[in-house]
Image (cartoon, rainbow, N blue to C red; front, side, top):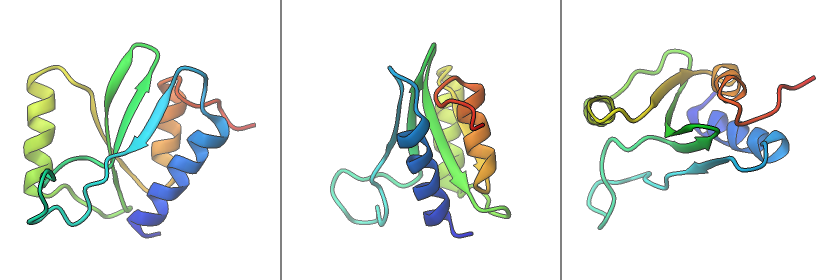
Length: 106
């Protein structure tokens, strides 16, 4: 599964099963090179739920963080901001369930 397909599936899952007072939103940053206001390394999603405001980077089953993504992760970690990296389609959905952002699918 491509990362773009994982991205669409995760956002669609939140739209279908997201709990009130939560947010899963795309950070539009594709093709950041040379475009004003865009920054290499920003994660795919911002996530907000009960007691959490953080970021989620989506990867394919074998995907790895780039150097700019590792730098952004370190920045978040240094400042106590939650930063998650998940692989595949199911892992990010389980994370959102565990964080209380989406209902568990029956």
